[in-house]
Image (cartoon, rainbow, N blue to C red; front, side):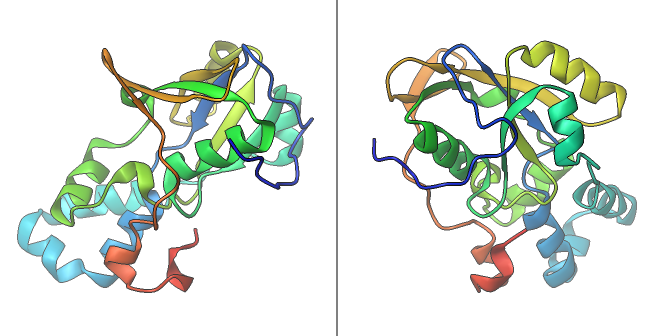
Length: 197
């Protein structure tokens, strides 16, 4: 593993045993781009009320400031931007030279957003996510409970481990996180400039 140069956030701490939490649902920026640029294709497949729900989900805000995150004892965080949650996990683990173990099914994503991703063959885990954060905390369960009280979709998805392996679990199947791929948003926008959320 090669160390990734990155300015720390929060307390700048990501230690073995700490838990990884995702606040907000993944894939929202990509779905918003599809709703903006490919609306006609979506209207042929989905009802209007479904698309309105998807638009509301894609535009949801977290209102989590750095000050608030530190009050919740979040010791480090990464914005889930270009490359999606997989790229955010790669950057964070690489910055601290830390192994991780993540449960893929635990990562929060709205079912409606998944259906839009299916239509355009988008991998939601490699898709810019708008307001979505990867958080590090000593007690991920307590952090998730506090964020749920604020109405934020949130889940504990894994933890930091010894070593440098970046493990991804899907039920009992183990794979390893690959080097970040181009953002799936390119399939919708066709340009790198539009892929940042």
